[in-house]
Image 1 (cartoon, rainbow, N blue to C red):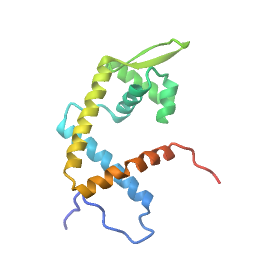
Image 2 (image 1 turned 135 degrees about the horizontal axis):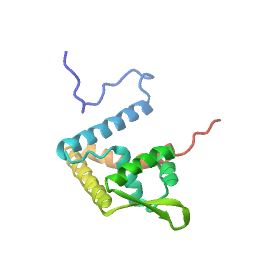
Image 3 (image 1 turned 90 degrees about the horizontal axis):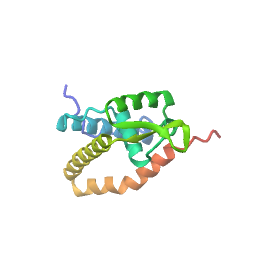
Image 4 (image 1 turned 90 degrees about the vertical axis):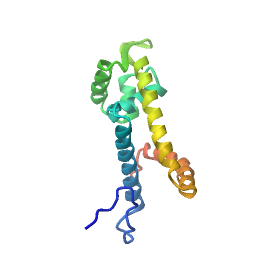
Length: 165
């Protein structure tokens, strides 16, 4: 009995067994897992937990930021973000200082090491993704690139609260 290769598209299932949402979720999950695994294979130095990478990305766009703002943006508990930030301070990736707008609060900023780590992480992922895209035929690549605006819009919609009608 042979196993189905990971990169192969799952066989079509009878209508009703695999709705579009499930297939899209499965594709996104596979993409994230494959990208993360390929980066660790190609770039063994990349061992930063994804939650920390995502915080670096947010701080790269919105810095300085309060813990509560980071938690809201990432939809995490403030205590979780605080713990992650503590680890990142220890690693030298971020610094916590008094918030100049409200001296009772603290603000988190990227350090030079954090900016360098984020830039290296981003470049490694872009190189890996570019290589994978280049391995596809023109039609497949065009389909993926053509879907990007809709995928960004989908991400926006996922960020909105559900209507309970």
